[in-house]
Structures are given as C-alpha cells and as structure tokens.
Image 1 (cartoon, rainbow, N blue to C red):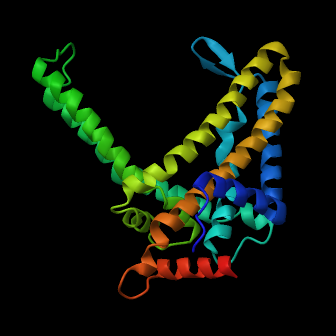
Image 2 (cartoon, rainbow, N blue to C red; image 1 turned 90 degrees about the vertical axis):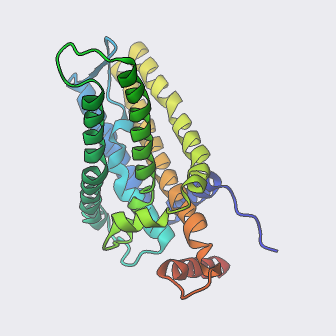
Length: 283
C-alpha cells in the first residue's frame, strides 16, 4: 500500500532543510545573498534612505530585495526537476542567463495580458462615462463599471495564475516557456490554487511578525538594533524563498506530472520526468 504523501508545505520545508544541509552551493548562495542584502539595507539606512508611508518614514526591509535570492530559487528548481547541467559554482549560479530569460518572459506576459487589460478598462470607462472633464456617471454607467472592472480584473488574475509554473518552465530551459506553462495548467486551475493556497498563506504570515519587529527595533534601538534584524530577516527571506520554490515545484509534480503515466497514449516528456522522479525516490 503506497504511503500517503506529506503536505506541500511540509514537503517543501523538509526538502529545503535537507538541501541546505547537503548542498554546499545552495547553502553558500543563501548565506552570501543574505549577507549582501543585509549590507545593502544597512547602507540605505546609514545614508538616510527611507520610504514614506502614511506620514511616517521607515527603513527598507530585506524582504523588498527578495528577488536577489532568485539564484537559490532556481537551484531548488534544478534539484527537484533534475535539470541537466546543474550550476557547479557560485559564479556560474549568479551569472546564469535564465534570469534574463525570466525577465523576457515577464515582459511578454505583460504585453500579452496587462496591455490588453489596461486597454479594455480604458474602453469601458470611455463607453460608460467618457473622458470629458467633470463628466458624471449615470446609473447605467456606474453599474457597467461596477460589473465590468471586477470581471476584467478576475479574468486577468485567472490568466496570470495559469502561468504559475512559468519559473519552472524557464528553469527547464523550455523553448516556449510561457506557452508551455499556460498549457500545463489547463483544466487544473482550481485544484492547483487550492493546493497552493494554505502553504503560501502560512509562509506569508510567517514574515509579518518580522516586519513588525523591525519597526519596533527602529523606534526603540535605532540603527544599532537594525543590524541584527536585517541579518535575521534576510536569512528568513532566503529560507522562505527556497521553501516557496520547493512548494511550487512539488505541486507541479503532484498536479501535472504524476497523473500523466496513467493516461492512455504515448508517453510524454512530462510523464518520463515523473517516472524518473519515482525511480529515484524508490531507489
């Protein structure tokens, strides 16, 4: 009888912890990036660079620079997906061209989805109220906006969520990552969303107390109290980034790859991936 699989969050935490213990490149990447983010935040605070929010100033949190942990995130994808040509050195990890491919994929997504969305909203506004100065909405126009904008926004969010596995496609060096990621989630959007909801909510809630703590330290201890908080929050950001990447990759295994070998027809590349993964696990 097959053993029940652990939850996605538990599987992501266990895999990340094991990888940090056994993979020196991942461990060094997280530590080096955390140190760099800490020094960056300290430099910004030291030079008086702050942001204004509701009339008060605050220091820049390490969480705002989470994108700098992208090399560690892609290394997690490599380890889970068994991607060929794994990064062998820290220099190669940071100079990986896939990050530019991810940026280019984001630009294409914006062109395909965001630009038409903005255009549709502007057309809706023009059709219901016009752009004349001082124009007032009638009941029909107000109703059209109240219904049309949520519908357009919901459609946009649905289409963007269909690309939830885009980073994994870029990590695999797919020739058409946007199209492949979009096709993979066809008919599985609800189940994927339900699977990812609680793990991502839990990871988000984990970071909230750290942001509140940073504000309290800034007010009570000033610059001296920020230094250890910057370092701890940067390390937590790296850990959460790696766990989030592991959760996303494991959800793809369970939602997309594992059912495929049971379907009739020729084996696909994804099915081969799933079979190889199970062979490694059993071995």
